[in-house]
Length: 468
Image (cartoon, rainbow, N blue to C red):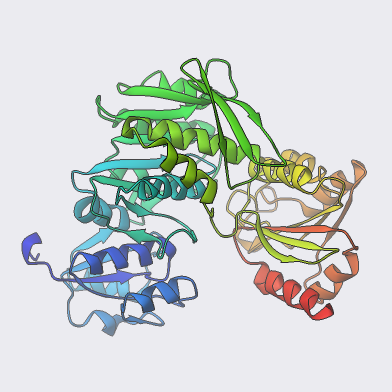
């Protein structure tokens, strides 16, 4: 093993992932010689790697590691049988998971601000980093998405603060612990806790146990900010040894949401007996709560009021979060990352407020490890029935799941129709033609997926634009 002080070269297996590409950029900022590979590298990580002049190869090949890099960083999507992982193991190279690399080389002893929870992590991580940088604090950050306020998805920064999206998903094939346990948290936002990641958590109790471990490692002089409206969050907050601040609609919340104006996005909340109102850039009550969480998390920073207000007003959000992809006088097309009934329901509420009186069509792609299962069969039907029409694609890789545990599309569509709303399965062939035949003038069409609908979103936008 090469001594840490002498380590000069790092190789990233799975460099095309958002987090891996961001880590590679930070490794380059640290002065390492950086290379990597992936099966395929697509925008936006393609452009990020090219802008940082980081060489990468496609596809994976054992000979890519023939020069024996000092360190190998392993993406959590990589499994045994990957030719580069096998080559690294055979060569006895030092292998780190991505979270281990971040902790050892990036966070070190800095104040680690970890944004965790089932929903809202990427948006709130971006918001917190944006507020700090707008106030003149050059915080480091690592964001699990494309945030237009930043030139790249991750940056070392020069301040003592490092803001990172903390995922409860497993660390790597060799380490089943949640990623966020590696990030040495001093400040934690626990936004909400619900059941998700059905491929690694057996039940909700297992999810709670993961977050309980996160709360347990916050230092006494640290901070936990959590959701006063979420029973699981409050149960865990009672075990914290650090200061705890709460936000939410509850009368007991330290930062209590009083009003969110859907037409202007003005947010009013109370704290310490005073009312505060801010103009926010993002729509939706769920984003108003993200705002409160960010303000509570940064309360000790004593940020200038003018800088805070300006940052909230000019925040550009995150791509694929109610992102408007097309708009004409008669149609609006939106893309969103939602893939859980709670997130879908929140977005439907926001769209109903934002486009009052217009017909709402949803397109759903059951793709995540939770959505493809029947865990939320009933809840998903009830949620989708809040729209006017739903088109649902076939389940992603259905052969991976037994029929007894797989989402039943026929039953889902029947339940939505029983609620008086239109629903159909999007055919595998002629999808675009089918969709366009269902769109009516005045519709708001929202695609919701953690995937890409196999290019259908771009095809739809192009077809509608060509009609003009």
